[in-house]
Image (tube, rainbow, N blue to C red; front, side):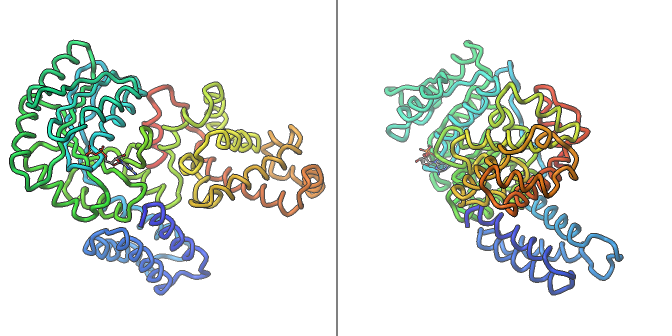
Length: 452
Ligand code: GDP
């Protein structure tokens, strides 16, 4: 099951539970069984899933919950916590610092997406102000250097490699020295892909590591191997000091959930996930926001990270200011719809905006969602400035709704639907109220608070 589907199944199970009039043992069991099924389909280890189920039941003791407690919320929170626990290795990874040379070595099985991921990693950091460089120490696979060269050129990242030299250690050392002299602060060494049975190649990997003394060794792994990720990650960890993992191909494979939880079980932090073949289909992996997004709870940290991409530069300070004052007006909704429609492959962006993902824009229905947004925008075109900027929920009386419907050639019930959508989003976005407006570099601190 692709992760988006896993998220969808879990959200549906939670939604069904929310729809029940009373929450008793049966409703809870049905919900948990549904979630269990979804996790097993994603190749999460049976033992983990069962443990999770037991823990949730222990936490959510229906009899003990005093009347008035919000049981649904408690159950949802318990599921959220358990999923986070399952994916959290409990150990942070080394992060390179700007202006100080760091060497990061990439290792992994052949075909795992290592070379592609090296460039994605370099490109990601380049966009954030680092000065990265790529070294191709893969002398084993014909064409490896060409591939890296091509990717690096496209991303305008300096690279080093050789068609003639067959000693990967020599190339790696030369490349690292050269880029240190050129004041690059993130020197990325790509090594040959290997399999855990290939003793000679493992020895070679150890030698490259010894010679270049990397600050961080990243193990790249294809998510399609599911639970088998555990053995592979352990084998690599025994040979070199793996400090972080990147899981690739999370976009198309059924076993993503299994791979992620298996890696967590080896106590290695997953720092990024690959979500496509393109350079920017690469996401920071942070357990809490990831699970929030999986459960359709909205990913504030992803939003804060992506706000630069989604919202035009000149609108950003004003938007954040308004949101921090708790003013999510219809005009803001209109502007965000406008930004989203301008952005191209909308599915990816949708899931980044809290509240915009699961209900307004279900996965796989991008076209319908786009049409719906356009319809809403046409109705909003018939609104007055007062209506667009008002924070007074009583302002939108029947006669105003009728006028908007007439003006946009829509039924009143469609206007009501649009206003309901606005209310739903306003409720979610009201969480931004009272927050300090982040200065550059403070984004992640803010998002951590929001996800806490
Ligand atoms: P390497 O042998 O480990 O260096 O693997 P490559 O970087 O050559 O990648 C192998 C294949 O996987 C290529 O076709 C890549 O385009 C593809 N690939 C890499 N990462 C991803 C990803 O996150 N999603 C998808 N769908 N394909 C990927």
